[in-house]
Length: 158
Image (cartoon, rainbow, N blue to C red; front, side):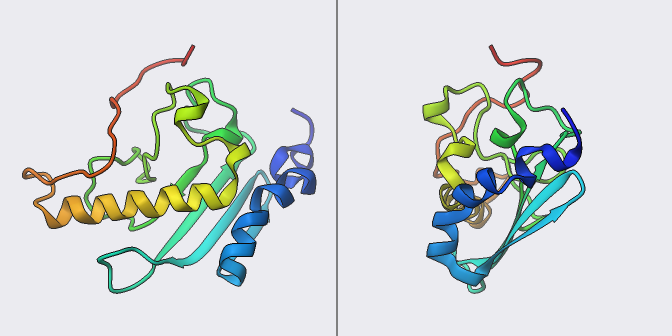
């Protein structure tokens, strides 16, 4: 990779189409912050069924992720944070949401070409599933309403 100003998150040719639909749908509730080596998108609060208050969400794209991407391009494996510290059966070691299985084919998981709006909708579904899981018992027989994939994948994805 060249200079950190050359990475996808610093290029309007990537960021503008990526966020276009989310900005149209959510307006000023979605903000972006470009930093040296990473890009943040923040939503001030997604409406989640069964939750009295909107849930703030942060999406982080790293130019050079310090976490395992399992062979996926960095832009296809961002970190998404919401409800940090709450119990969930689907969280990464850094407490980011485990939204999809990286070993699935691209048509079965989110990819950057799907855009920010689809990622935020996937995030809202995940937060709803976590909320329902906690409300139905959590680690003691809580019910997860969404599809589940295996955890603990090691190594590269073919």
